Each structure stands twice: as C-alpha cells, then as structure tokens.
Length: 177
Image (cartoon, rainbow, N blue to C red; front, top):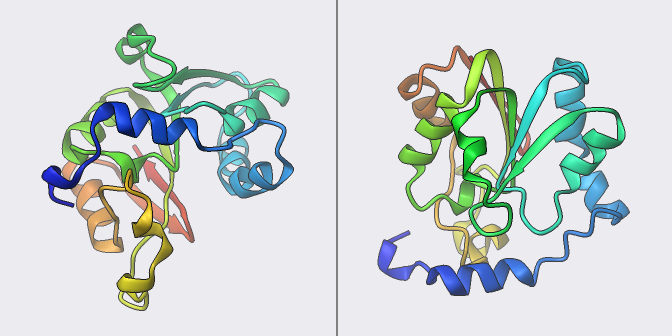
C-alpha cells in the first residue's frame, strides 16, 4: 500500500482500540490456538518469549502463561517497554501483526536481531495467493493492513534475514534460525 494511504498513527491506534481481543474470548482463543500449540510443541515453558505487537488483549500470551510460559509483551501503542527490544528471545510471536508493518524490512531486521541462535519467529497472517480474488478478499479491507504476504515474499524474508527455514502452515509462518 502506498504510504500516503496509511492511517495517521492516532487513527491507527484508535482503530486497534475497537478490536475486541478479550483474553477470555473462547473463539479468539481457538483462532490463536495453532500459534500457541506450535510454540508449545517447539519450546518448553522455561524458554523466554516475546509477544511483538501484543495489542490490547494479548490472548496468545495469556494462553501460554496459563501453561507456565514466560512471555514479555511489546506493542508500539499499548506495551511500550522499549527496553525489551534490547534483549534476545528463544521465540517471538507476532499474531496478526506483520500485515501492519509500514516498513517490513526494518521490522523483520529488528525481529531477527532479537532472536537467540536456534530461535523461531512465529507469525500469523493471512497469506495472499493467486487463487484469492483480491477485489473480494476481506483481509485487504482493514485500513491498518498495509502489507500483504505471498509465499514468494516469505521466501525473500527467509533469504534476506538469514533464517534457515520458513515454514507456512495455512496462516501460521515459522521463520527458523
């Protein structure tokens, strides 16, 4: 999306405040379960995680914490503990976040720098493919969704930021160091 079409930061923040990401919402818990289950299958509870773009209702973090996991929350609007971006993590989760990146190259460079050796970046986002009718694709209608991903762009990210592997499983992407 052309940057001139981006919402102002205040308008973007206000849009996020309308999201109903209640940590007790069973439907949203079910929605994020592939991400949570993947983290749990790759890491034990003693691993340190970062929820990057945690938002107003960090559902994934709550589910992980309920299982004994330690996850730090960072969000440029709602959890602005900038010191967290000076640490490294065993895993990072970005649930419905990467489509909001105004500068994806900068953001992915940051995320890669925050991962420990052997770490994994877990992302959830709808992946565009040629089989999708873009004009009727619901995902593009959110004005805060400014960047869309295709399997080719996922591969470009893998190569450019020196991930060993990128695995796409429906809306879940794992970038493995």
